[in-house]
Image (cartoon, rainbow, N blue to C red):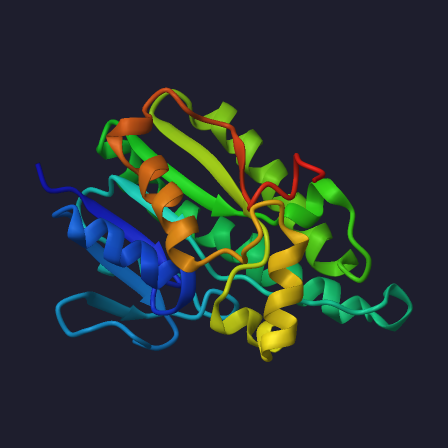
Length: 231
């Protein structure tokens, strides 16, 4: 049976890979993002900037089986050089944008009977990494939001969060811009490679699907073993 999923930030990177996973499974997708990006014309796209726009509720389908909020940021600076505005910017895109999107979609998610929400954190929340103060603070809030909503919205809606390590996307382009940087990133991971958008998207697609109906309130590391292994 075809289902309908909402992907916020689905025109690039992990979000775009998630669109592919869902459409290949025979389901419908509506993407909300600032630009169409890499999407082809078969995918329904609604222009939406999660940091500035009101969510266009009138564009939502009658029933939503799952929502993934994919916009994010990578702010890596020494703490002494971080301004309060940077913390607010990271919080706005990673947390408040998710809050806005979930609030707008809540009634339609409940209508499906088995709605699922997937959010994204980072391995840096649990590991403690230098120069990650702003983004780790925002993503820690995402993890708190995940657990709180999972409790409040059960049993009608499941809420889970994926915490990746560095993934080879446009957002991470500056960190993987040379073969030397890519090799160094590969070596930091116990599985000896940097993640791909597909690695993360496959887990997100599973959490959105009816194959994961007994999973909620979880922070799941898809990180090449970085959060748990020392080799």
